Length: 136
Image (cartoon, rainbow, N blue to C red; front, side, top):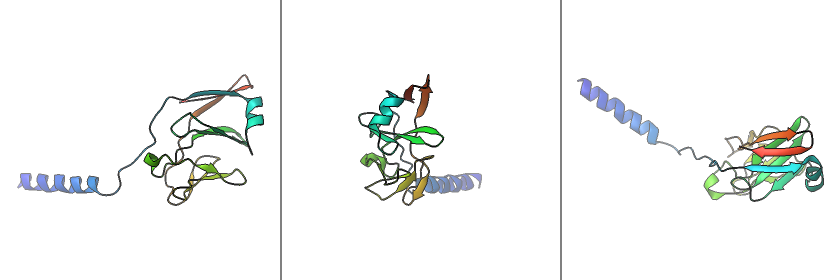
């Protein structure tokens, strides 16, 4: 009787774990990018700097009212497609042009379906008040 209950429990567990879409995550890749605050001010548009060839699909470095944030441009919606999020007018949100998902740049939080996961963030430090360093 115990074997039957155990087999039934294991079967239910297997069914529950196999249902639904598996979590797909943006992979970890080494990031070590530096730029001066002055260069950022010159090269950024509306406080947002697009950095190619870093992270999975590039980086977005964002100046907010409280400091700076760094995000991977790879959309968390179907990251295997490597769709790059793009800044919206106003510089407060970004959109995945492939899915229509939208995120808030203040904290990377999802704002419009099908976005449900936060944007991938990187560690950002201001060194000596002059140099922005993005790492993971």
